[in-house]
Image 1 (cartoon, each protein chain N blue to C red):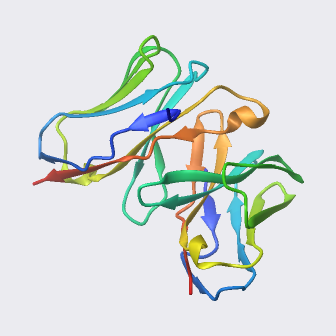
Image 2: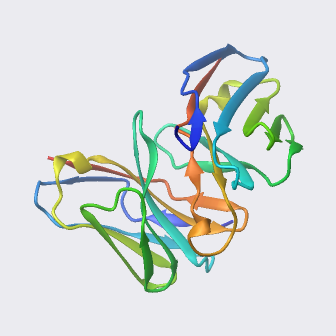
Length: 110
Length: 114
């Protein structure tokens, strides 16, 4: 089974901090994604990458950046965390049959 | 009009009931359709994947696609308390480049009562 591992389940950060969310997949997938999930708003795509060092903005990229230096790892960076970035963050990788998601990181910015 | 519409519920049914979950979409270019199940505080997991119009069955689950009406459904037979979760529909236009992006419905919260 494909495994997508997110490094932290719960994080609490202070406003203004730089935050790194890490995601690793073990199946050599080319495509990886970062979503945030909020009640009533569903899943919203932040960034995705279809190859090493390739990235594309999703629907809500403002305040975020990403890094993909190796195929298996896709990092989401909050340059200066704000309280409106408190959310559940989900990483996914994709093969032809759909996405495999990680368990999510619940980030609270105080 | 949103690309994918899904009734958020909540939907509450007794154990053993047949459950029907639905999504409509506006983009006729969508070709691949998926249903995900998400338990509380977990990531979504792929439940069903289908490409063509018609029905696809997997155990107690049946996915139905009607491309002419831009309507997809997920049926759960003999529902169990363990089916209590949020169900998300998702779809994509195809493979290659940015077409790998899935578009999700907002999810329907289902509770199956013992």
